[in-house]
Length: 297
Ligand code: G1P
Image (cartoon, rainbow, N blue to C red; front, side, top):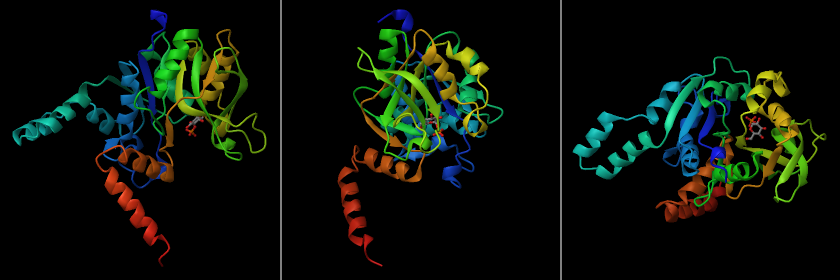
């Protein structure tokens, strides 16, 4: 790996309105909704930290306070916990505030995902960086999803994005890529389209919310005009990256993917993560109970 290519910074867009989770997201950012007892954004930042990322730029709209507060010290809380002898929990709270250097940037107008990422330009500067979307969780305790992409970038100098094959008929919900595998074993992307109209998709390979992109993306983002849904789309700027000499790889990331941006996906993620905790036995019991009563009127 070239030292100069080390990925150290990440952008987490968190400025969405969270309409799919209203009223829960009326006063609380969607990213703070918990998976069992951990806010979704903490799981995402933990993935980044485990991949060696030290600086995270969170793009926020309304409610920036809750996310900033969560990653800051909570002296009173920690002090009270310690006084009560709950040192372990106090240490855990303190560790959250030191896990990452967090910069928060406001997206003043909801102009789209590409625009949200562009808001981080000054904070990131002229180096490759990761983008992690909070709606997508990639569960892999040993090899974080974003680390798998960072390795592809570090080895090749090309950007890398996570892809997954979606069932027929679901293509219109995603950014879709098409291309061929090359000697690296990954897909060399030659086509990209954001939310293709039904029946027009070039493949079933959908973009999952993990990207590692070279700094050339800034110029492309700045030049990107509104696309699908009238928004400035990240996918449209990435298409330009894919056409540049370095190109862009689609990588099938190892790990269990959860779409926590959807109510059912969110419930599924909660169950899956609960199964990894001390609640495991009780969760199995609970599922049996639910099934047993499901058919009763
Ligand atoms: C965004 C991206 C899309 C990608 C998806 C993954 O869409 O624009 O390309 O496939 O995330 O979750 P959104 O889900 O924000 O509409």
